[in-house]
Length: 151
Image (cartoon, rainbow, N blue to C red; front, side, top):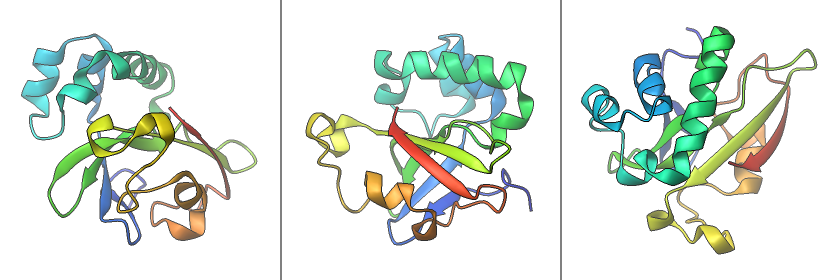
């Protein structure tokens, strides 16, 4: 199994991180919401298609065009595994560097938490939970240390 084959899961959080296929990612990066929705109708929400996420999609689309090996590591759709509801984004900013360092980024749709005050629902994840690789099953052998920030 490679890093990209299956959704990643956060232990005890009921959250899966689903990889955005390259075609859909490039459609999102090109501000083509219609094509993106045709490609991934069950993963994309108004929030994920909205203005707040557009810059991120553009950046990630350019990133994997220049560094295709990053595609397995970057931003994924965060889905509540119990309801199959997309609730935000999470993932690494790229593959591990020479030291084995990865940076984790995430954002939650405001409909699922008060983003402004960082009151994220405990059933999903918090900064301390995501930043501790021992607490996550999306830990990867080549990623030996993590850094995190909200994206």
